[in-house]
Length: 635
Image 1: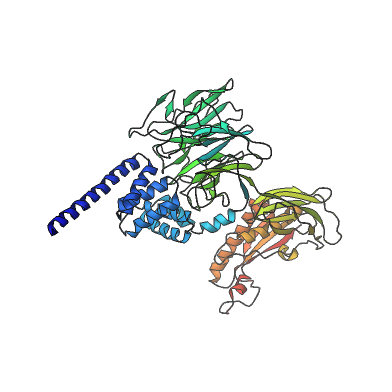
Image 2: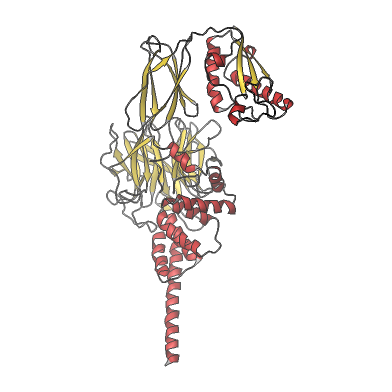
């Protein structure tokens, strides 16, 4: 009997093992065909039986990760790393992203630290260069006010685009879908393009299917329209004129198509010439002049899973050769859903640049021959989940897509407006209360970058528009008055900020031999130890010197630079001379004629206190000797 029981137990065990192996084989087939929902169901049944393996946990994590369900992916990536076996570096990155989706940034950063040691990946380098990324994101947050929209369903709704006084977007909803064909990958309908009217208050109306000529039994998504409304570029599966084509590995890729509006119907639908059966091209966007098309692709030469490209369009509608936007924008991750606003700013979604989790939306300024470093646009637009598909119009109103918590469906479309406030006031004489017209008023950001300038009206009034939750500096100058600066911090209340500014008349005579720094009671121009570059606070004070020299065009000054007593006499003389000449060059760069300036370094020969060689002094006492003077030598 003991032998019989042993045999029966062995048979049952073998049959159970065979059943699990069979399920894994079926799951692998689903996984390889990107049917992640079906694969997850089978994999999890195997995992529930206590089966543990690197391959199983990798695929379960990936299936959720690629389906945009990062919090669920976190569970299985966590199980993967609990096995304490060697895995590819990419899994450290994916687990970090999944942990961010849960809000666990501390642990996510720990895994990014490990990822950084295992690869030369640009995503790791960007993380290393921006370890304070959360603080940077917080500093950019708050300028947007967002709201839900009425067009969302319980399905996928994403990828909005402006089309005249309408919004066209992507949806897998059942109502209005022309074919109601279920996609194996999503278990929802293949997506169609839908349209909804947009009123002047930013509210959306009834949703209808865009066009039976555009929408097919396969996926359509992410359109963009020319300003005249007669041409549309959009994404579709590799299917046109009733024919579908597959890649060499039997996958139906995405392509960008062009359609023309003829007699009220979309026709002449053609794929763009740089598309291919063997790689993806998707999510088109047009430059303001409509001479450049931007898009996402994994074509050969890409840095990562999806890169951003641009291609020229000539006046005949012919396309040039696609150009990768380069490593400033693209990483080994995903860069996708580009949009170009009317100021030639590029907005795009990325999981490769440091963000809050999943896809975040970034902004980068496009120059003539380059693209500047992208900046995370912050909360509340970005969240710990996927945020993408950003568009904005000339009224600072727009839409974006997200799968964040609290949505109606799998992806939802949200509206937003840039939070702006008015700052305004009256400029007057501090002693007489006289209204001062024609005073120059400058608006700077907190880093002293000039944003705007104006002149007070005949009633002494000035006015600026500023973003919410930001710090600004307002400078007012007027001939015969001392330059004045005020710092303000905006809020998100949308109410006007009233800031009256008074100027004190300059009653001091300016004559040869006077030090302008002392005369106008401005801060001494300090330098850091052993340095001669212009500090930000020094640049701020030099602006006042500039103002005075512009008010007195015949004034000539001698810039005298001094050091403290540390280092040798020879070293200090050289250092101070470099500081003096650095100050001179700064003023020249701001428009002062070189003939009106002279500069010399005096080293430690003219100390303002007793901190000579061998005398113990504090850093504050030493810094008083590291200074520049501005002596008037001609009027």
